[in-house]
Amino acid sequence: MARVYRGWAFIAQRKFESARGEFERPNINNTLYWLGVFYLGSLDTVEGRPGDAIERYKDYTAEFDGSKSLVNFYYGIAAIKTYQVLGEQEKAQALIDELLSAISASPSLTYHDSAIQDASIYALSGQKETAIATLEEWVNQGGATALLQQNIRHGLSVLADDPRYQSILRTVNSRLIEQKANLARWEANGEMPPIPEVVKNTGSE
Image (cartoon, rainbow, N blue to C red):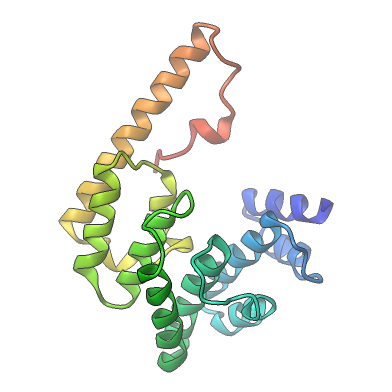
């Protein structure tokens, strides 16, 4: 468990090579571990090493059972993007089809950012309008999370230039700023403990 925390500390410091060393160990059934693996795999792809990313994901391939879960969708989205970079379109499409089936068979919200994951799958499959509509519905229901902006973990970069997506980001940022202002006021009034720095910095980009 200690190496998992060390790995995330290195990620926070942007010491990615050191982080990779901590996560290149036998599989650990721990949320922070698998999330770190996926984060680093996505980074491998962005940095031009998609083959390394696929190798990193292999421990999780057997766990992908087509159901709508946090692990499956994080793995699926990351692997789809990597296969597309590698030009292995058939493998990418097979994962897209599985995840689209999981979306159609499950409620729209099954975990905290599932609407963002759903929209990511639609975007990666070329269904841009459905992706935008999914995010707009989520925002209309009060959705607000800085995760929306973390394209390394999602598949929404194809929407980046769409004015509707930009409007969604502005709405989400406005809500996050308001929430942080409320937290600061409560902290100043002694109604809550000091705000961690990681919260103060969220949504500012």
